[in-house]
Image (cartoon, rainbow, N blue to C red):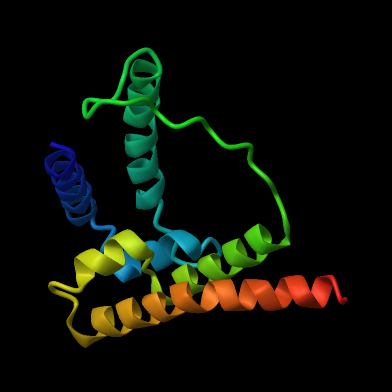
Length: 143
């Protein structure tokens, strides 16, 4: 049941990305081009996602997961150097390529070699992140 729900949710998310045009890198880059040819479409997509999710979280807070068990406790957010560096790197990659993980995976099916190259680079970055993070920690706390 859990796999079926995950498949349905992922398919719905992917369809939303395609329908909204968020797999088009020029749209995303247009959102980030505030001083040029700005495209506000992404704001409407985010608003269209945030509002239903807010309602879903309120409903879920009163119940239990469909697959049984309990929802995990929310962790305490911690703003540290690793989070800031990772956020900056994510933002730079998103701004340069116009893709983030969801649209990148969706674009592999139709985006040609550019989508595949981005996906490979994204996976390499995911493997490199712990190594870079450990190096940052060692540099900040010399023994």
